[in-house]
Amino acid sequence: MYRELVEVRVVMVPNLSTGEQTPYIELVRQLPELQAAFSRPQVICEVEATAKRVVEQINYAKVLFEEMRHSQIDNDEAGDD
Image 1 (cartoon, rainbow, N blue to C red):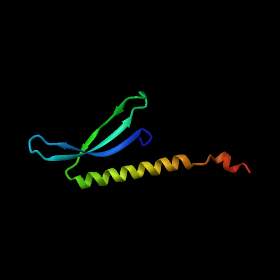
Image 2: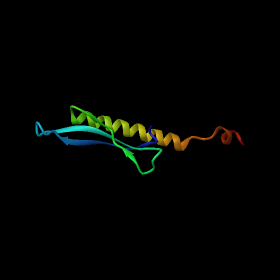
Image 3: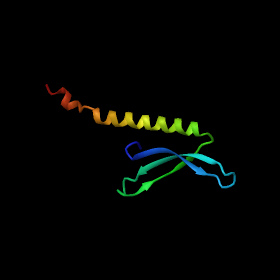
Image 4: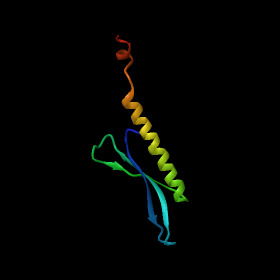
C-alpha cells in the first residue's frame, strides 16, 4: 500500500449544520491500473490534533518503507567477493 500512497493530509471540511470545521484524514493513492487516476478516501476524526498525529505517523512509516526499499542489498550481490 505504501507504494501506491502519494500523500496523506488533514483536510478541514465545513459542517453545514454547525458551521464548524470537521477534520478528515485524506489518503491520496495512485491507482496502479490507471496511471493518471487517484483515489482519495477520507476518514473522519473528532479532534484535529488526533488527525494531525495520525497523518504524521503514516507519513513517517511511508518514509521508513521507502528508505528500506531503496537500501536493500541483493543477497547474491553481497556474497560475490
